[in-house]
Length: 449
Image (tube, rainbow, N blue to C red; front, side, top):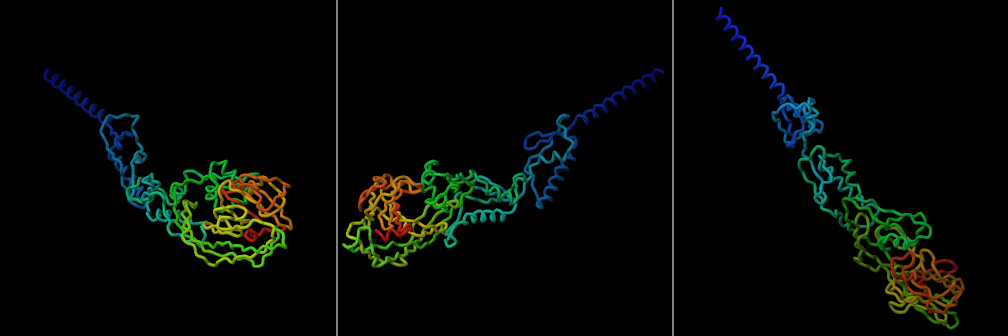
């Protein structure tokens, strides 16, 4: 009886120990988990390691099929056994697998070493860059010869692993290339404004304003016209070297014969002058379509000018003498002739109403012949200007002066100082703009001086 009791107690103890062991192992299994460590950072916990790895492989495979190319996993993914933390536990393995940093063999566009975008197909980038460059050729005279076109910044297309998140299609790559770091500043011309006042208000030179608006004739601005006063800044600048030839006129000289039977403001042309022609070839550098430099490369005489012979009255009128004396002013050179002129960049034509004679600021300006001052003061684009009526339908105009020495109604003699050279109104530098009108019609001033 005693032996049976001992055996019974031993069986109970063994049963209890066995139950405790089962409970211990069950508890250990219940609190066991894996930290998901991606690139050294714990992002979640999972209970089933094998199922997690299957989800990662499945995600990588699905992305590859979607792109049509195999992808690589750039992330360092580890599972580390740990105790369960219910707050970190993740059961959606597909969601968790998307933390993997996948990449594909592609091409990066670098501008001065900085990545702008990345695509799968290299030819897409090459095509976009070519189209971008050619976009700046628009607006250039079709007769011009583009010698070279390239980028100001260093551009590279590099092959390598590209993260899926960085990959863009060709449309988005083109948009990124076209994006401006700063848009151009454009103003509208208001009543009473001219190129000189606009340039002054925006702290730029007339020359800079002309370069930013090559299609605009600065002497003929009207309210409502729009002008660029600050160019856009792009991510990638295009430099174009071009060559263009335009035909320009060569002014003829005038031979005069004095006639005591004629008044000083009377002239009789016994032999008309014929302007010559020259072909001027310019080397031009453009940056994003705007002129950086323009230099004369070659000049070819097409036709020599024919001197004009004029019989004039004995009473003196001013006339040209030597290479610097233009009669109405002593100048350095003729900076712009009378008549039609062609812009060497745009190829567009505009009509110039008089002659521009470059001269130093303050140089004296003299009346062409005796007459009466019909206007003296400020007149829009002319700046400070004097009109002189010489009778017989003849009128002369002297524009852009820095000072006026006569008043309306004053009678002046030939060679009388009426003012000084300046750069007022729509002027690109110190010069005299001289016009001659006969019964209201513009005439070539070189037929008179």
